[in-house]
Length: 353
Image 1 (tube, one colour):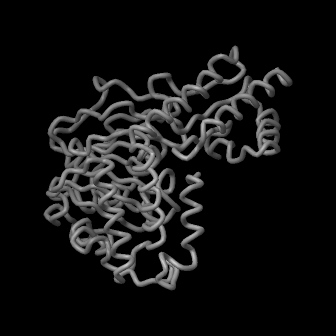
Image 2 (cartoon, helix red, strand yellow):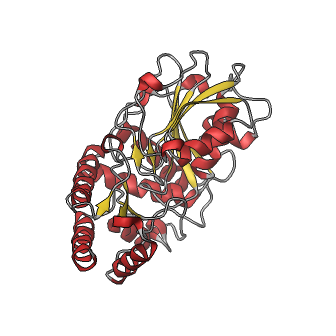
């Protein structure tokens, strides 16, 4: 979901961007107009997140999934091994991808308990000689979110923040690399943004087989324009970043995320067991809320989803791999949307309990 104001801005500028006579989709990525769009987007990213001046910012095509390969190809170096904190399906995919290029260790893995928790650090198996430690800050499929930055000592920390990016402040300096697909809170699909600690943008740790277009150094040194970038997603991201700034910054959206998720979890927890959130309370996501109905009956779920859609509430089906229901309540979701869902859930329970 994207802010209506942003979609309206895009609509106004669709055919003729600021009087230049063409759409952003038609202009050269080397043109003065587009270079200004990209430069302003990067500046606002830095301002909003407080990115340290020496960190490099990249905008890479392929989304976060391509970064699953780019990370080991750019960061394993001579150590050849990395640790992964696996707390959901996306963390697991990143872990499996690393195995193609080096040795990957699952320092923790909650798959045996269906990805419903974040284990205590005392149970992790961390290798102090690892090239980096990777974690996925919010797991969209399983509804698991880290409420803190993992402490991994002096080993470089890497975070996939695709799905909760811009929903709370982040201490960038605690990470060697943060990356995020922009399609949840920042724009349309097609690219990811990344904040890279300077020592990993020099090419010193880059594998000889790293494709040029996956190279952190190449991407950073070329200002993310080694070739034609994803111009329209960059433009749309720029509009969303302006919207975030005008609304009061990430802190504003952090408050909204807490309010939305609290409202929905209260509805689930106060249903006398009719609805159930499978994730442990301390690991619950503020932006992806999976839930099942009593008995987890497929027909009841189907009926629930059909009734919700009839009232204009779509995309509530759980991921195909886990079933049930899932409400994704990203930054642009108005509080009224969550209130409407909660009211429907209460009516459905009364009619079907």
